[in-house]
Image (tube, rainbow, N blue to C red; front, side, top):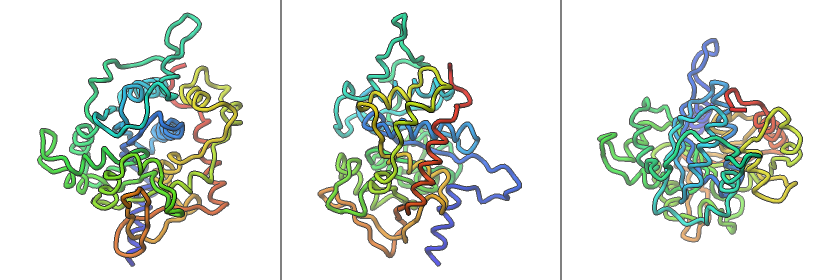
Length: 341
């Protein structure tokens, strides 16, 4: 019975439980990202903008969980191009060290110029160092949300989430961070861990092991993770990047993909699967494990234990993997409603 209830919660996180004759309210989403470390973050954000175009989601905020200012500036470029320049972005200070911005595709895209020597992509904001701390942005956005309404999609390090749990009452809410998450968040989806192989210590976990341990152990709502082995089975095709964007002029996500590695390359869909699971879910795409616990060891392994607990992980059959790939390619290659040509 508990498993049935758990799966019902998962389904309602992706599909409105309201009468199908009525248009469902958009899902409120926070996208927590280490934008720049891998191209899957940029493609996952593309998906979220397309879902927003469709009226499926309301993208409330984008907290960044990696150091540096290239990520928030790149997010400004993306938001401006896709027609969502006002989605608030948060930055992290004294976060985990994960490499220099200068080596990231974000910086390469930001430095691109047109034929007149001007920036190739428009910005809507400036002063990225003045953006709010990610944890403060979380607290503000959650305090303004309806109870039990927010889906958090975390596709980078767990630092922001752990800091939210540790936060205290402030000008945004008299609740502690743990109380605020428990009241306002419906579900947390993560791209983290490797459940199939505990000898492989997945990147998002090992960059900040203490925070990952805290979140998997203490987060006060159900957690679904899309683990490393799932996204590794499904690759976004380079042929799509090369052939499917004739409708677009300079495209920041396409240029980011081309800048990340030497073309042509197919890239794993780690973060994209987490976004798809959060917004659409469904048995045509994913198999959900029994509920239980996910424990992060001191070395960074992620161990699932079936039984008491409200953590679960996703897996796919070959048929589901093909369905996911087809859906992702269809979504990403579609023309955004509000992008600037």
